[in-house]
Length: 227
Length: 227
Image (cartoon, rainbow over all chains, first blue to last red; front, side, top):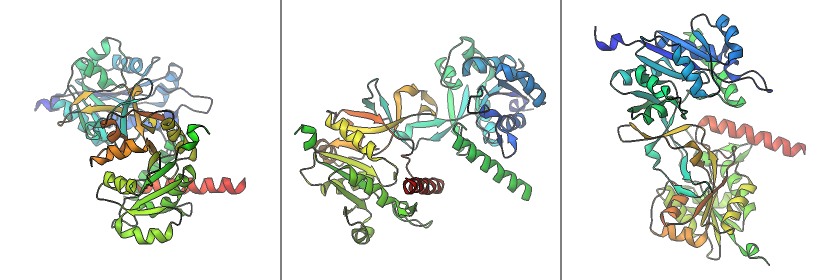
């Protein structure tokens, strides 16, 4: 058996959003008839040995009933705390841990496999990235432009992000906060590589994103039905 | 008369796109019944003393007939060359020159005024910027992550970009190519500041952007009609 076959991949799906006066927390919204959180966790489940879903404490009981195939745990007050709560529920024999945002329901199975494969191949972490289309400027506190980085050297990153399990656990052991999990691993000196992201793997944030996601999920369901 | 009143503002509208086998160059597509180029040039005309529109050489004659209120000139083979062609047609008494992409038809008059005001106030250049919502990574040629810049220090920039006219002419005199005009002014050591950009001031690039723009232009026209 090649070493690659011995990897045990788990995914932590972070669904930390709380409801607002405008309505339901976005991870529970239905797109194409399925809740976003179920769709995101479903792809993660296909991609590995198991899934831990992190939700606000108030939602844990309900979600334990709703999600039969995932371990459901309560999140913390920041995204990094929620990831740590999820990580604590990942079995110790997991060798690769992916972290994924529930708000990205269109990450493909192939994308999970691509980030895990890059970690198998030796990286400490692997993250999906897309070329940056906007011109980005670095500004100072007075919003004067300090630099215009070469756009070719920039990527806009997505989840799922995959990590060698012990490296991710060490990166989170200090209790730090990062823009993303990769930043914590980078801070340890870990080698993080970028694989091709997916245009459809958008983070669903605004009402117009939700409308797009619903239309897309329906279109996809339609083409599956027609096959 | 305060000095501010003596400023003479001109805008170069860059519409360099050529048609493809998929259809019309995007600047000539209609949104809400009006061509994108006419809409972009129309706002620019309200904002100052005059407008130079830069189009592909093959379109110049047709556009001179179509656009009665703007000076129409032929562009070059790069965006910067096209800006230079436009700049050469701006009267020498202009004191502030804005550069605007025809593919951003929803820049408001207030945005033109805001960038011009920042130049009046002493900056060499002023550009609209929005907070960056994605996590951005700097990568090396092998796509290993080199840095995760603090997102708070990054902005995604738009047009119109306004410049002190003589500074912009100097910045372009060397014939350089920049990601944007501000980058050429920065390279000279000019002080470029960022003002608040506008969410609707998107660059229309993909067919789905065009559908969004058409719907938005129709909605806006409807609300004007109802007023």
